[in-house]
Length: 271
Ligand SMILES: [Zn+2]
Image (tube, rainbow, N blue to C red; front, side, top):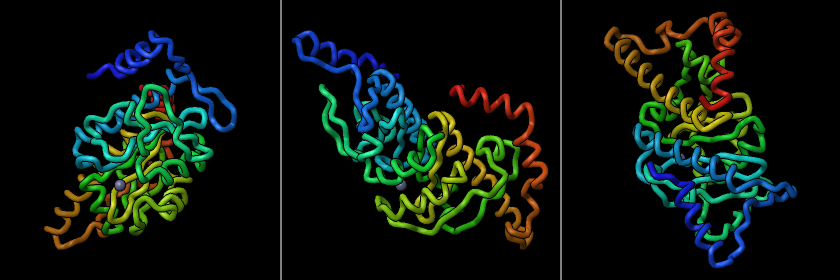
């Protein structure tokens, strides 16, 4: 794996050698200074989500977008780059309050993904969210497009998505619009995943791995459900006639269990 920190470090060192002043932090519009080192960690997390999404075929080519936030500064995939080979320098920094790109010495000024509105709106609506993963996974998109609800039906579903409810689905809204940002916010306020009709999947997390795991989990569970639907069809039934969902008391028991609280503590540390 490329050592991104070393690559950026070399460029910055070269500038410093010829006495070009390179700041070690950026200041957000609220006046808070945020170190570039900590923002590099966020950018690396964004690249990790993009790479894992590409490895699992959750996006094609330049599709999908990923972001992270730290102290009011968002790192978002730039438009026109491929997920599989995304680098931190291809994740421009954006002031969350103004939406403006923050120029960095030694780096090309790149245009952020056209889906910037839905990423920024999410961080404003959910201050607990630190990373966003948006992909176009095959099986989840089937459920999203047909508008089928995905009820919790395994302990992992409840635990990873931290929910006792079905994943919400909304009908197609054109990409890159303020309207899409509005619909995402309505759904993401109370959920960690939302299915986007005729489009894909949007998940959030307290760290990059948590946001990505939620995407991966929804896709795997969509695949299981489609296998079940195909078995049901062979018996002349449809999925709504299959008693597959976990009972509500079991979902609540899982969310309140000691082992799950312990697992959540580990997840919060990004493990
Ligand atoms: Zn998309």
